[in-house]
Amino acid sequence: MKSYLYILMFSVVLAGCLKENNATLNSEYQVLEPKGKQSQEDKIDKIEVKDIAILQDEALYQFEITDNEKDYKVFLYAENEEQSTQVNETSSNKEDTVTFTGNYSFYIGELDGEKAYKQKVLADVPYTFELNRDGVYTLNTSKKTLIVLPQEMDEEHSRLNLLAVEEGKLHEVKSEDGELINLTGSKIKALNQRFIQTAQHLTSENSWAFSTWVMDGESMSVSLHDQSMVKEDEIGEDGLLTNGWIDIWNEEEEQFFPYHNFEITTEVIERAKLGIPMGSPYPIGTNISEIKKSNPNFIKEGTVNGSQFLMYPETTYYFEAETGSVTAVAIPGERMKTTLNEVITIFGEPEYQKDKNGKLTAIYHADKYTIELDTEENGELNRAFLRRN
Image (spheres, rainbow, N blue to C red):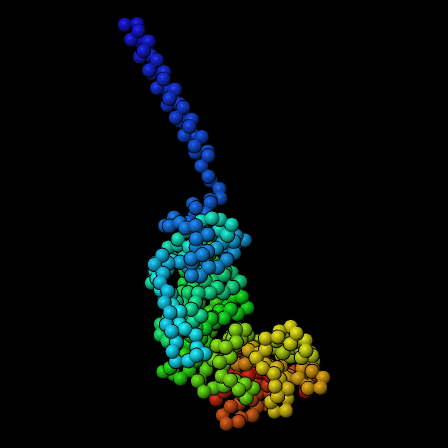
């Protein structure tokens, strides 16, 4: 009987010790759990993992992207990718057409890591890519580096999917104002690191539409900031250009269509008195060589009505041929998006006004300088000049 009591007491004590040890172990395990910075493996959904070394050899597209001072490698890859070549038999100068098809997905991994993780966004979507036509590319804005994935709608246009890295994952950048549509085979433009611009052909209106979008890095979205229409047969402004705007936009990577980024205020008059034109950092009298050096990406240099000019998308400078001194500066009406009536409410009545075939020109004096406003027949501003008297 005594032996039985000893065994019973020993069992109770042993059970108590085991319970205490388990509690201690659990407490230590809780302390050891990571509470701070998580690894990428914890943050990214482990749908599928691949070696970066393999993706570097087999992915159709790959990019290096920095987000919040952290470097990533992004890949576009399809397990079932197939390549085909259509031999060109009509012209010896035209390359054969090479296409890649498959169910493509994005993978992302840290730049110095060994693994990349399949992303949920646009996963396993069937795509066909024609080499050198509508490839995937990146675009830098002030907030994010965008990955642009075009989806061809027809021979002329593609629907654009925008993606960006946020906390180690790829996210789709949504549009608050409808789809982003761009000319197939053309890249969208990045403007001043904040805006992006697309172009499309409106066949029913015989026009080209230039849409300017603003990027919001916080909400991971874009919204329409401005849109301008240009008729198919409309070339440059008032004879300065021989090519249409769509040709300039489409063929020259640095060029864009002017968009609304300037407001008419009373300050325009005060700055004009100092020879400082609206919408330009260079005052009247600046040598044209300084402007060229600062921004070599001008559209055209030439002569119109006996005056030398240097034209950029947003500003045109007129200068003396012998000295190079700027004598007048003009900005296009697309930058102001206003009417002469609205300007009159701010500036007051013009000192002089003339009518030429329904298009008005209003003159305001500003000490040694003159502000000249040209309008369209509907009263919208076409151009604004600052000239030296």
